[in-house]
Picture 1 (cartoon, rainbow, N blue to C red):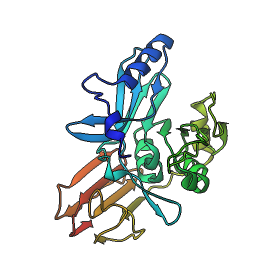
Picture 2: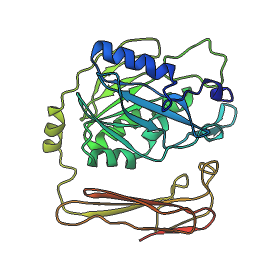
Picture 3: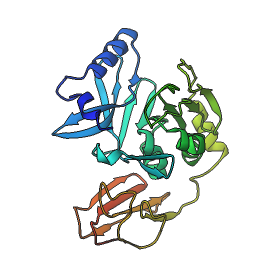
Length: 298
């Protein structure tokens, strides 16, 4: 991680060898490419960024990783992405020739709220370029993919680097790229070695699954408040959490989800940074970076 800045690319400035290569291939093959992730330097900050390139070779969307990863397993691995990278601020949904795609990067898959928002915006598929390590991969890789699928009845695809068994790094990649269908079925999967995998995405199966298994039929309003890193749910969020201390000291997030004639609403009140609020159809999300203080969802 300490050498990542030396590999950073200026995507907005047109000085990105990785994106240039993706653009050439996409235009030559007339395909859409979700291009993994590259370290992006912008305004003096380093981001973990994924670009979606269309069949014309142009960038259709750019996602900066929202949730930075941190892990500390004694005797195994210690890793804090936030020591190097800055977190992105916006979710990303892009219309392509193969459907509407939501983009997440690696640790973004751990947050069901993001996938829920993507479903509300009409995404058919969520793509998560990822690099889980040997510990989290064995425990969570398959579980996280299928959880996001079952929660939202859509396709999830993950693309991981292959594992290098001779790597001298403490961070060894799990691999095992996959395509998961809306019933939670594995449609295609690679192992941990270099491989090319082809899978078919039938968008009609999304409607079939949603008709057969009704998750969003009854009119309801569900308010969820999450204090990230603590696992505590409630009306008040306060204090510090070690998971997020390298980014912000306290985060309070509110969600309201409604169907039918009931309108979703939520308000975040905080004494830290400016409150942000987004409404998309029947989903409303709001969050406040509360510093050492208190933020309340009402």
